[in-house]
Length: 529
Ligand code: FAD
Image (cartoon, helix red, strand yellow):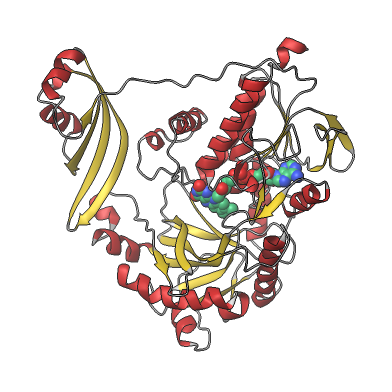
């Protein structure tokens, strides 16, 4: 049974459920919170809203009594059942490229189905990668194959680990449960805006690797897929790793993420059908977390026993551009997220506790396919242009260009600000020089508009750091109804890099659904070896 009920804070859920269902607490066998959200629309009254699943000792009797109650419905419990294998015989082990959420999900489903996948990841294992990234953030060398975009866990490893998605799909609960099994906090199963935090996420991805290996898969790091060979009928027949080792295979799941630009070029050269797609670019903005808490709750979140507040803002310009907040990280830090030498890219992350006291979010403006020029890879060159400008404006040492909102809006000379978290450092400069005009002019109008939504949002001393270019893939690897790349049988592009997902959850879902499609078609490998 499923009930939606608004609950003033600090009251017992069980007592409220019993009251709502007109039963005694003793009738209740089990209560499970499946969603918890905060309703702050009627400040200063803040409500926690719970959706709960309730099982009763005598369900029929209770249901007869409460079935007309508002916000109550009866549901049947459904467990995830993997698909039945198909009958096409595989000659070789399937290959999964990338250990981001999409690759991990596909590899785990295939391994558990008995398909013994081989996973190739260009970056390092998460412990080595974490050491490399920390070294870079502290002013050490930039590593093109081991950074915030590349390595075990993919792009989201150094993230806030937000698990929100606009997709509504029955498999999402199974995915959350898989993450909990791998070490994510159990509250992600019911929190309205679930998040894991980079500190816990690093263990989760490592545990998922162990789960894949335990089920018969193999995971190889520092193994970049440099070529995908197809036979005369266009069917995938082998992949080359690091330009030298060839592995025969009939199935390649390609979960390369949005930053594998060399791999996109390789696919283009090999005749795989690609098309450009819209994305967005802009800056990271940072606030004292208390500014955001007060704007959303009317006081500090901690005073109410709540987590630091987040926000989602959008502004539509008369010219048809939109500026919106993206990947908002309460209590986090802005991170250096470049994956190519001589370029600067920003992003955001936070720890599980979200306790840095600084809120950050991307503020980005939509880029259309007409903005970037011709050819399927034009969006990549567009991103590169502004990342290079940012690198130069930052001082050509991976420091990022930064400016206060006051200086940006008034055109005054860039002044230093107190609150900024980007490492290895920032250079105070004019951000108009590192972004397209249509982006800066839209930002100029959006900031005061956002300031009217959250007081203090556009205060003079607030810092913006640039450039934020990796919001989503600028390329789509075109695939058909069967999830295979057009004219490339056996090649299954998945996740954010394929252009069919955005964010951790939807990438995970895409990888899982694609693996299930492969399972429905092929026999498990054990049958044929
Ligand atoms: P990726 O995670 O990008 O993984 C691709 C993997 O493929 C990488 O590990 C890469 O090294 C590997 N690879 C690429 N090319 C090759 C090759 N040729 N051979 C072998 N391996 C290859 N999303 C959220 O939902 N919530 C968040 O809080 C959030 N925060 C983020 C914070 C940061 C700093 C970043 C960078 C991203 C964040 N995202 C967040 C976005 C999220 O991480 C991505 O949407 C998600 O990781 C996409 O998953 P994926 O599997 O498609 O690709």
